[in-house]
View 1 (tube, one colour):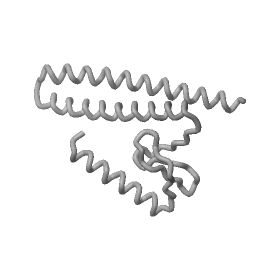
View 2: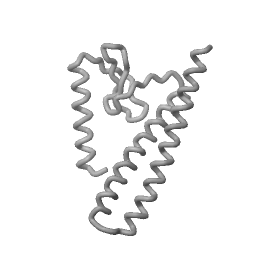
View 3: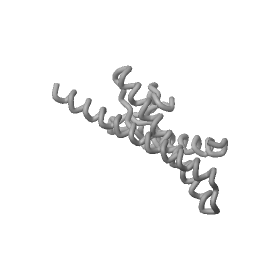
View 4: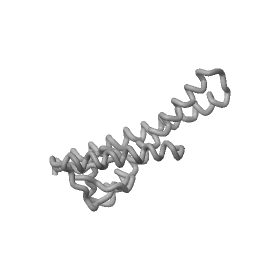
Length: 134
């Protein structure tokens, strides 16, 4: 990620935080376990991260590890998708053996990341259904 991309992303996150506050959300002392940004409690009671837009309610160390792993995998998935798009753009301009090889590697990475995300989602759903029965 270039410094320009990073600045744009930071501006977007700051705008999201300001929008949440204007909408009546409360900024909490707790931080997102993935990115470290402050969490916000919406009027509905949901707790969200302004960067991910996901609800994070972590009750134990094992839940924290699962949430962190999920977040890292999703960031890697985003990076792989971006790299694949860049390589496709490069290949549209002409044949490039190195770009083809790199594209193959990123496609393999994306496939593996998506498999891991699917496994984590399955484990999470299974865990939730087990805890509801007890």
